[in-house]
Image (cartoon, rainbow, N blue to C red; front, side):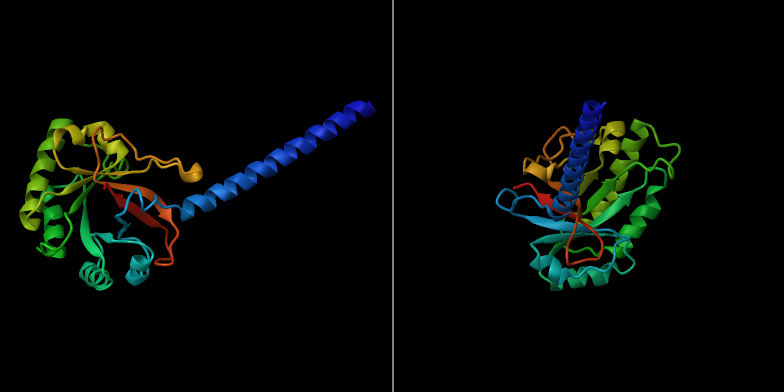
Amino acid sequence: MAKRSSQRAVRRRVLAALALGLLGLGLWGWWRIGEWRPDPARYPVQGAEIDAGDSAVNFAALEAGGADFVYLDAALPDFEQHLDRARNAGLQVGAVQRFDPCRGIEPQVGAFVTKVPRDPKLLPAAIALELDEEGCAAPPAVAALQSELTTFLNQIEAHTGRPTVLKLSRGFEARYHVAAMIERNLWVTGGALPLLDGYWAPGYAGRPWALWTANPRLRSPASDDRLRWVVARP
């Protein structure tokens, strides 16, 4: 009996040590991911994306922290003020317009051209393509989506004077295969595993990307919120 009790005690100590080690590894991984950005030697041009729901951003601190550019959500209520502050901080600026496949394109285009100036100094506009299962209960078929999206892009590009970038979520691409249908530069998200510095960009688009959201939850003194950190392909 004493021997069995001793064995059980050893097992409990081993399991406790293992659990403590896993907890420590998890905490270290959580900290590491929050601090991680791709190596600038590998991706020398890096920046951030600011969403309409984010807290105030200190663009000077963002630039000092290594950002070369920033993409601003066109739905920001004070988009032009954000644009001016980002430029004054020395950042290149682009706009992100979200495409809703369950809404008419005219109001969406109208919202963009009202907010975003026709300015050749802006970076190419990015069109965010995501599936909202709750807000879009009956998404269009592939052919209808391609037609609507092509018209949408043509109108946005008529305003900006240059091709857009498709910010393509994994779910949207899996459903509609946009990367193969529409020839535009691509912006992909996710896929990094930085814990051991062996990271890679996702390949779900099936062809090379131009921008990659490498860390969607970067801690930064530039904002109280986590930042979406983006790199450009060299």
